[in-house]
Each structure stands twice: as structure tokens, then as C-alpha cells.
Length: 332
Image (cartoon, rainbow, N blue to C red; front, side, top):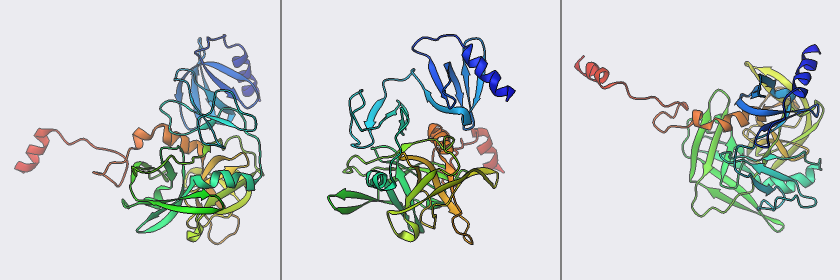
């Protein structure tokens, strides 16, 4: 308790910065301004002028940066560019320069699962390989999408099936020109991109915060369990800190089955808060998802996880040895 009070006192004592400073908004309605020096999956370091504060991610509501060009503002209802002013009844999200996903600029209203599924369902896809299938979700209209690493592990022939609403009917479209952009084998994450030349702009989701979730809060998943595409399951968040194999997972009562892997877990504001990736097979209502904070860290540092065709078993690229080393090995 004393530590938290000290942090708040430090925030209140922070000097007033110009409009070009970054702002970290905290869950207790306080904020701190300065220059963000580093962002890790569990903490953020910010220079407030006379000292550097390290703030746990669990206390952060959002980070507003002003050292990038004006954000691309999109409506999650129309998925088209909209003016800076927020239209009545529509939630506005922002995608900063260099970032390939969108986040809400302000808290979104809670809605029914029925309403959200009708808006978000087109952004959830089925990922097929010669060895099996899984789910995924599109994170921007250029065709970037997330799934689990284990869905595409050892595969290079990937097909993504998108379901578009055409009146009362659904149109299935398969895209076979899919490129692996980045992978994290140990985090079970993979970033793909649909590169078909004739592909239109895609419907996409926005990413939220698992840290902001409360235990008992409603969540729902969309995916293709056992190949049954566009299946919706609803439940609650059972815990945010289930430790398995050294990592923390979200545990949910929303039904997760083989084929759901790589699909999104949504909160009731329509934001993705996790990536579903496993369940306990001998139990019911024991599904697990990777927290979205880990996904955002992976996306923000995707260059470090860049996939290489020359070394497809992991994301790292190795330089050739010096020429004299190669020569010595030939002479041996």
C-alpha cells in the first residue's frame, strides 16, 4: 500500500510537459506525462524530467504517444475512414504510424454478444494447412492476421478462409497466397499476411487489454472448433493468472476445442483480449488464452521474430561464418 501511495505522489509531483510529451493513463484515473523510454510486456519506463519511473503494465489503462503522425482513425462499425470527430453511436479507434493493429482511443460501451458477433464475425478466419486447421483473426484491413504457431508449425502451404456477409448469406473466399511474417515458437504466436493481389480490404478487429479485465467478466470466442467455422461460445473469465509451463494464461469457461486455436477471445466491448490456444481435454469449461498484452508485445517487436525461409524452424537469422572459417573447414 505504501508503494502505491509513493507512486501516486511521484505522478502528482511530475512537471507539466509540452503537448509533445507522451501520456500514460492509469487505472486509478491518474496520469503521468514524459518521454516513454522502453515498453516491455510487463512494465513501461518513462522519463518525467528529473527521474525515470517504471510502471507495471497492470496499472496502465492506455499509453498516448504524440511523437508519431496523426493516427489513422477508423470506425469499427463501418471499417471506413471517418472524420476526427466521433460520430454518434460509433466507437473510434486509432492505429499509429508503424503499428499494424488498432486500439480504442477511449473506453468502448458494452454490448450484447449477438450485436458484436454480427460486426466482428467477418474478421475471424479459418487457417488451413495440409496437416490440419485452426482459427485466426485479421488485425488490419491490409490482411495481416494472428494465429497460433502450432497451427502452422512445419507448414508453408497455408490457406485462409474468409467469410463475408452478403445480405442474409455468407460468402466463403479462400486465399492461398499467404506469407508467414513472424513467429514465436515459445509464445505460440504467428503473424501471417494475405497477399492475393485481387483481395479487397478486410474487416478487422481492435485489440484491448487483458489487464483491464475483472474475474467473472463476460467473454466470448469465435472460431472453427473441429472445423465448424464461425462457432460462437460464451462464458466468463475464470482467472487472469493461471500459470502453466512458466507462462500466465487467461482461463475461461467459454468452450475451447481443437480448431479454436489461434482464434480471438473477446470482451463484451468487442475488443480482443486473448488468443485461444488450448484446453484441458478431460474437463469441461477449462479453456485457456494467451493474454493480448503478449500479442501486442510480439507485434510491436515483430522484426525480432521475423520468419526466414532459410531457417524455418525458428525466427532467428544467422550470419554466415567469416571466410577464413569456411576455408579452414574445407581444408580439413
